[in-house]
Length: 158
Length: 158
Image (cartoon, chains in turn yellow, green):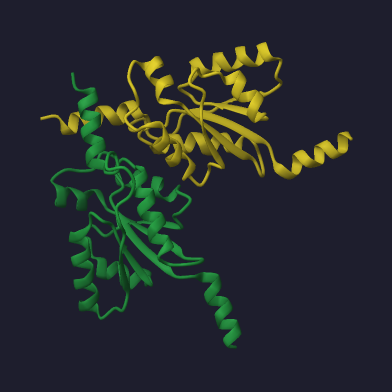
């Protein structure tokens, strides 16, 4: 029984769960997702939770530039992504983890807030899921949506 | 012999050449690239020419928000794209066509200017390459980099 379970697991590969808003997609997003998938080893499957417009609005005080359906579709069009799903509006990572059953949850370098919520939710639900923190990548400029928005605003203001 | 040739042809498929700046990547870009690849039929290979910073600056009077290396890498990270290449700084589509030897050149709905240059260059070089015009997609909003920049500027100006 234990052997069979292991076999099934090996065949499908580990499931890695990543998440984010992915507003104005940039190379930093892609690098984060690539590293997240790598953490799952060979044949890993990468499932990405894309934050809902309402969740972002609640957390940051304004909606993303790109609506949620477009952000989800764009994330799903990336080679590294196996599946993209819109999150729950109340951002319940415990509920997501119970549904997706990932082996690993990958947290971005700028997601300290989410990392705390993940650990809390997993402890509450008694879920044994590895949490991996992904490092920062590339040149310091233009690897965040905030910086891109700033540059656009500077370039296009009159 | 004929059978073997057919087999080889089936394996490699038609080469489709698409091009663009792909500054602030959005779903309209992905749809254009998907339709371009579809025009090549089964097993088509999609090669994308990404415009150089200098070419864009010369044509539009200012550089793109994202530098060329990042735009190229982001385009290459899309499922639909087999290969992304930076263009020549002087935008010579005839030179590109001679090098890549595409079966089809796909022109976007907003690339009338480029369409004319393509036809002219192919005639000059005596190249017999099919030119396919790709339609416009999706909702009218946020399927152009210009509109995204406008929205960012509106949201973030103080």
